[in-house]
Amino acid sequence: MAFTDDFLKHGGIIFFFSIIGYISGYLFHAYMGRVLGPEDYGILGSIIAILCIATIPLGAIQTVIANFTSILKTQGHEGKIKWLFIRSFRKLFICGVLVFIGLVAASPFVAGFLNIPSAVPIMLIGISIIFSFVIPVNFGVLQGIQNFKQLGFNQSLVFVLRLAFGVLLVAWGMGINGAALSFSVSTALVIMVTFLPLRHILKEKTIKDVDAPAIYKYYWSTLMVFTGFILITNIDVILAKHFFTATQAGHYAAAAVLAKIAFFLSGIITTVMFPKAVEMHNTMSNAYPLLKKGILYMLLLLAMLVSSYLVIPDFIVTFFFGGGFSESAGMIGLLAVAMSFLAISYIIAFYNMSVNRMGFVFILLAFAVAEIPLLFLFHSTIMEFIWVIFYTMTGLLSCLVAYMLKTRSSVRHCATPD
Image (cartoon, rainbow, N blue to C red; front, side, top):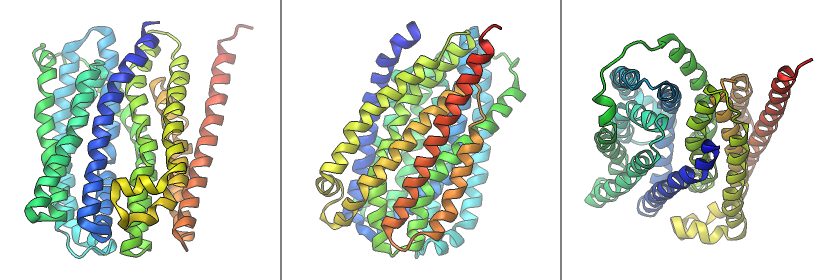
C-alpha cells in the first residue's frame, strides 16, 4: 500500500516543479514568438525539433538508469549505483561530443532542407547536445532512488535558466542565435547543480558487479520506444517547415507548442509511476493499480487543458504569442485532442516497460514510421496535415489498449490454476 499511497504525494511534487518548468518553457516560446516574429520563430521551432531528434537516445538513457537504479536500491547496493553512474556519465559525454561534431558537419545540409539562411543557429543549439547526453544520467539516478524533490527541482531549473538566458541573450541583440545558445548554457549549469544531491552516492565504495549485458539489452528496447515517441512529437514541426510557407510554419509551430502540453503532462505521471512500478514488479507486487491511477490522474489533467483549448482558443494563443499568431487558434483544439491520445499511449508504454513487457514497441514504431509518408501525401492544407496526426494518434492508442488488454488477459490466464 505504501507504493500507491505515495503516488499522489510524489506526483504532487513533480506536478509542482513541472508547472514551474512548463510555465518557464512556454514563456520562453511566447517571448521568442513575440520578439522574433513568425518567420524566425518557425526557424527556432524547426531547429529545436532537430535537437530533439538528434538526442533521441537521451530519454531512453534516463529511463534505463532509473530502472536499474531502482532495482539496485531495492537490493541495497548503493556502491553498484555509483559504478553505474560514473561509467554511464563518462561514456555518454564522449558520445555527445561525437554527435555534436556530426551535427556541425551536417549543418549546411540541414539548413538547406529547412530553408534556413544560416547554419549558425543549428551549430549553436548543437552545443547543448554534449551536455544533454550526460544530464539524463544524473536525472535517472535521482528518479531511481525516488528523490522526487531534487529531480523535480532540477528538471524545472533547466527551463527557468533557459528562459532567463534566452531573454538576456536576445535582448543583447543576438536574435535567434541567442535563443539557440540558451539551451547549452542552461543545461550545463544544471548538470553542476545535480551533483549536490548525489553526493551520498558518490561517497560510496564502487562495486563493479553489475549485469552490463542486461542494461544494454534493456536500453535498446527502451531506445526504440523513445525513438517512436520523439519522431511522432517532432517530425510534424520539421515537415511543416518544409511543406508550408515560413509564416504558416510559424503559426503551426506555435499551435504545436501549445497542443503538446497535453502530451508533456504525461511525463509527470510516468516520472512517478515508473520507478514505483519497477520496485513493485521486482518485489513480486501487483503494479497494475498504479497504471489505473496514472491514467485517471492524466484524464483529469487533460479534461481541464483540452476543454480550455476548445472553448477559448483565441485568448490562449493571443496570451502566449500575441495577435500575430491568430491563425494558430484554429489548430490547437484538434491538435490537443490528438496529443491527449498520445499522452495516454505514453503512460501505457511506460507501464509495460516497468514490468518488462516490450511487445508493444512494434506497434509504436509502426505508427511512428507510417505518420511520415502520410504527412508527405496529405498536406494540401495545414488542417489536412493536422487530421493525419489526429488519426495516427487515434490508431496508436486503440492498438496499445488492445495490446494491454490482451497481455493482461494472458498473464491472468497463465496465473490461474487448472
